[in-house]
Structures are given as structure tokens and as C-alpha cells.
Image (cartoon, rainbow, N blue to C red):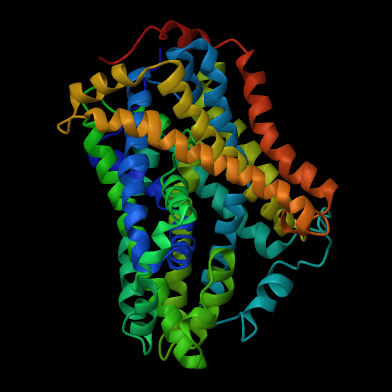
Length: 508
């Protein structure tokens, strides 16, 4: 019987967990979210959300993986056979995300090359959508393959699957020991350069200036919880899978605090770098900083190339460093996302890691080609919105309600974590998971469904992004439903003999 893989060192696990948490969203989502929700005042609800939802959920998922020693589906199966579907739901959400996340990393890889001689020119928006993505078809049409996206996409999957083939210790751990320190050093260089540019002070003032009136708004608190939730890799099945490779004696609670605060520290660093650069851009164009604030893909692939164009010196070098940082942040996250279903497939079917990587990773790689076509951006936009909003957040809500309310496992999980951790969990942990987190996530989901229903009456097509009913049905709602339906189907397949043989095994 094959011995379960383990991390070589505690630092290796923490770097892998931090690498999973630090992704593209830290760089292009957090700065805009903070600015739009009270600037410096946003850090109050943000820190509160980290301490009452982010870290408690990390502790819970670390405990589930460590206690039941399996991928998310196997851990939930060992917890209670009726909850196996929940693990598969999380895994299939991760599977869908990996198919298009890889393509965004491919864009960043291309742009690191474009940055050397500023190939994007002056019209960076036109370059992205027309010249690079060749977006010349209607939503729902694929058009032809875009070589400039497809070729780097091959490299992205070769690196990702190569790391996973090598295993947990020699692959994932070793890669993150290279990727994460390199990412931090590169981004520090970028931030130091950004804050020394003319106008950077105005940008930082805009970012940090507190609007305390905003924190009386419920939407700001929901935004804070949403940011923490989406940036920490919670409910992706990642943290359960990664913690299942921990040795028996592992300080779960400390690991969760280190992971949570490391992720938030990088988000703050990203905010400083982004707003320092935006302040410079505003000064160069003689407009207020508010006029150039952007988030998402537009920030990375439209606004930042504009900023890099105006750098007084070595703009090609700093452009290269910025996009390589995106590549490293993206790869560390993609590796963790893909590992969730590689581990689940391996255990469910009793096959080798190599076979699981080849099948699961290979299938994801093939499906990702859809997003490398001329119409790929439309498919990516719809899938990303629906799988994120109606996948991750919904999984998280159901997961915490099932564990805290139905199975009532919080006491046993608390005992397990306290038995091996220096920091002991008290009543606050159970209150956070049993009351605060379900209420906030429940409100988030209610508000989300209400928003999408109201959209039916407020826009011409009644859909997200103004897309047609047919397109949004099969590329949005169907994608979100796919994850949960296939989750129940996978539950009907009997576990491999090895998984069943070990089903009685728990740590502690």
C-alpha cells in the first residue's frame, strides 16, 4: 500500500498554503475593493473579517484535512458518508476555475514578453482586445484559436502538471520554495519603484485616506468578508487537501494565523504598489487619482501597461518584473487548485499520482483551449462570475452550516486542533463558525440572488454583462450547476479498496 505523501518541512506547507492564497486577485482585486469601500477605514472591517471568518475557516479546513487524512471528498466521506458530495462540489468548482485561470496566467506570460519593448503601444486597451485576444466574434461563438494565447497556455500547463507529477514534497513544496520568495522579492522591487515615482504620494493618500462614514454601511462589511473569503483559498478544497499531507504533530492554529496574515500582508503590499503607480499615472495625465482607479483584468492588462509606458527609465524591465510576478502568483495558485482534483481522482479510483495528473490535469488543459479562442474572453467572463459567486461562496456557506449545525463537529475539531497546537481555540472560534460566518455568507448569497433577479428588470437582456439568455444559461448557470450535479454523480462511485481500508484511520 502506498504511503501517504507528506510535506518535507513546516515551512514547505506554509509556503504552499500562502502560495495558494496569494493569487492574481490579491494584486488586482484587493486595491480597488479597499478604495471603493472606505479607503483606510476599510481595514477595520477587513481585519475583523480576517479574525472572525478567514482564520477560523482556515483552522476548520486544516483540521478536517489533518484529522481525516484525505482529499476533500474522502475527508468528508470519512467525516460522514452522506456529506461526500460536498467535497466533490468543492473539487469540481476548483476544476472549472483551473480551466480558465490557466489562460489568464498565459496572458501574463505573453505580456512579460511584450513588456521588454513595450509592444502594446499607446492604445493598450485596443491592443489587449483587438491585437492580442483578437476579440472579433459575438458572445457564444468560439472563432478560431488565438496562437498568442494558446502557445503560452501550453507552457503554463507543462509547468503545472510537471510540478504535480513530481509529487507533494519534490514537486509542490519545492516549486513554492522557489516561486513565493521570488514573487515577494520581485514585488518589493516594483513597490519600491512605484512609491518613488512623481505623484505616488497622492496615490497612497487616496488609498489610505479613511472614510469612516462608509463602515456604517452593511455593503462595506460584506465586501470585507467577500475579499477575505475569496483571497484565502477557502472552500476550494485546497486547504483540506494540503493539510492532509501534514505530519501527525502539526501546529494547525499557528499555521492558519501565519497563512492568513501572510496573505493579508501581501494584499496590503499590492495596494501600496498599485496606488503608488496610479498616483504617478494621474500626475502624468493631470487628472485626479479617482479618475484612473481600476480593478480586475483591466488594471493588469490595460492600466498597468499605460503606467509602464510613462515610467521615466527602465520601463521595459519593470514591466517585465510586474508581469512575471503575475505569472508566479498565478502558477502557485493553479498548482494548488489542480492538486485538489488530482488527489481526489487518485483516491477515488485507486490509481497512481501520474495517472491522476494525466487524466485530471490533462482534461482541464484540453478544456482550457476554449478560452484561448477568439470568443474565449466571453466564456471566461461568464464562467468566472457564476462559478465564483454561486460556486465558492455557496460551497463555503453549505460547508460551515453542515459542519457546525448539522454534524455538530466543532467540539471534536476544537479538541483535535488544541491537542497539537500552541495557540488554543476558545469559545470565540465556535461562535465565529457557528454564528458570524453563516450569517454573513448567508446574507451574501441572498444579496447575490436578489441582484441577479433584479437585473432581469433593469437591463435589456436581464443578464449579467448584458449577455443573451441562451449564452448565460449554458456558459454561466450551467457551469455553476455542473459542479454540484457531478458532485452527486461522483458520490455513487464506490471508493477504491485502499481508501476504504484506511477509512477508519484518523489522527488523534
